[in-house]
Image (cartoon, rainbow, N blue to C red):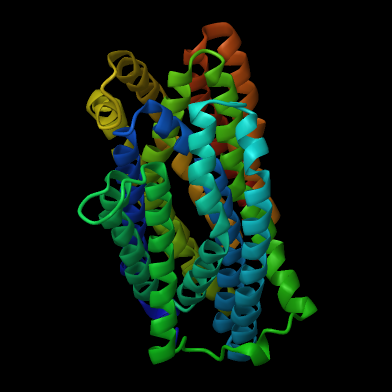
Length: 445
């Protein structure tokens, strides 16, 4: 399969054709997260809080898988753009093997650390026990997540967005369908509650991986791939990790952020932990379409960078930035205008709805400006500038928002935590613009 269309097709149709399938699959994934939370919420606020506490660890696994996968995609697409298909196959094959290694380490490590992690928030009681019940199952299957993401990024590097979309959507829909059966014990299924939610999640992930295996057996990848190319080589591994490690750290920062904010918000009331859990699942419904644009942009930008198409690179960046800003504007409007109805999907408690609506309105004020940081960070990863991308994300998810939230909580109470979101997004966007233009100017010389 030739990838010349990534250098020849008009930019807007190309970006949309690359991005829309991923946007669709990620929207389905976001829908799964929301529906899953709605089902769990029917078991009570303790159950939803417990699952929300485990969510940062799940996000960490996904972040490491996606982060390293970005390294695979950037390397393979760069080599394809440069016309070196053999090295593109080596990048894909070695990346696949390393994704398995990462997954095994995460499965073992996070399963062992889970009790201590939950103990940071609740040393005993219902929430702690429910968190263990749910977390032990989903953490044990972390390797399935990292492997399926690695395969997804290999397909994306070649401009094939349809296969990952179909496989991911199938897994998410399987999860959505199975949730009520396993959680509530419909028909012949036993009532398993939060354990049932975990089992449905794992089955959905395995369905996605199984579909990739079937597809590969029938159609292959389009480049050379297999054990003969999997033996790690220094130059390929260096390229994978130079982007993959900073990208993984970048994507893992939200997990640390959620953990720190849970501690701050929980000091006021446990309902604010619930509100944060709901927000971070809801915001994926907004940010993942923007991420879909970035995912569509990465292989195209990497390919044209490898091919030396400087003018086309500028066109790609302009189109993708405009699309991301438009998406985030829609997200801000939804969160600002309809926060009450959104919160009612997860709880019937009047105080939680009122406090959650206030939080969503305030946090949403930073959505539009954040589109600049999201696009700049993704573009730098595509250009092999993983460290510069990480600096932007470090500012956004830790260096700015955490101290601002801490200070805000001291001055304004819990409202100060919510106000820290738009303040940090604005400052990060200014820094991201400066970092991007400095690095981009140097790269294209």
